[in-house]
View (cartoon, rainbow, N blue to C red):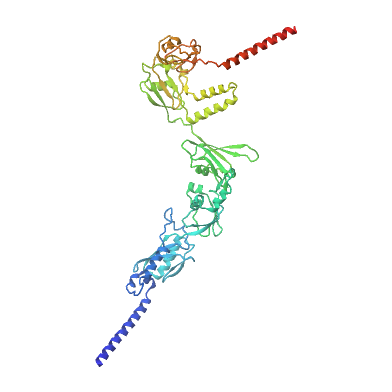
Length: 572
């Protein structure tokens, strides 16, 4: 019995010792480095017992997914640590390397500090990224002097800035957001209630304003004012014209009425037009805003037109780009860049028909003549028939349309077109222009008449015809069509070959139409040649009412003459 009691006493003693040892180990564990406990989760994973023993891990995962999200913010490239200013909600990664190897997420608190276990609180808000790194690493090394440390920006923060002018409100940005990005959102965001309401309430024909892109103000929290010029930023790539945002910024975006504050640039530049003026603009800036010179620009021949304040006249100022880059531009100035004379234009003409090598041939600007191209094409073939050869000139469609429109507009200045029939005939003639160039090929090639050796234009078409040996007869004839040409024969011969006059023919008004000139002639006024046309019109029979009207008019004239005669006799 005593032995049993002793055994129980020994077991209780061992149990108490174990409990005491456990408490001692627990206290010893509590005195461990808290930083090590945070970073060495494997030390206490297997000792958890009870319901939801893994709750700390679950909540830790939720925290890392929400507070320290990997939400990506678009950036232009690697952040410049000397320019980036640290602020609340910036997410960093603190790394320790050596005896302890661990990386932990660290976020800047709303008070602008970073709290590091066993190290303490370190103020970083308002410091550059370079300075913040140095300060944090210096503090960590005091506690962990034998380890290497790093402090890396993981995700830039977001914050609210105020915008006035274009719209009133707060907008979310980040330290890597430029002013141009918020402008893009404001201009194209159709859900921007203030802007849409303002535009809708000002929809009038004469109301033509837009947001300024060159006279924007960014007011910092300390009162510093930065002038934002989006055009100059893309021209120079300097951050000062399109800065990044900081907490407390106020962006003032004025509306612009371009009619009251503009400069105009035209001529040989990439993108001519009117642009917003900004104080301090010079010639180099304006040329840059217009995307630079085009390939034909004469950089030493720039003319600036400046309105004189006390009159309605313009003052002309001649400028050279290299010499006058810094020339100060004023509001309402107009700049014109002249173009070089292009003698090397890509011009060509087409020659067809009876030449040895028909096809396209290059010509020089205002220098190549008709005979030059015929020689380039190898000269004429034996079958070439010069009286039927033609030179067509095709100008640009835009020029031709404007030219025809101007001719039609000039109808009001004429003294010939007085009836509707005259007007219809005139419009028909305008529409039927055939773009022929009057050239006598026979005089040019056989008699070497230089007056017929015309200068060619781009897109000209030269057609060297062969002798068709035909005459086309049409109109009121028995069988209209082609009749073989016979030297010396008159119109009556060709009409008879075509079946003679029809019953409706007006033989007295027969006409000869020349192939080349398309001129109309009486049969006895011209010689019929190969390729010409013989036209027999239809006899127009007058209605009885027209005949009565003519008789009445004649009778009226006769009666008037008789009456006058009788009065004269009576007076005598």
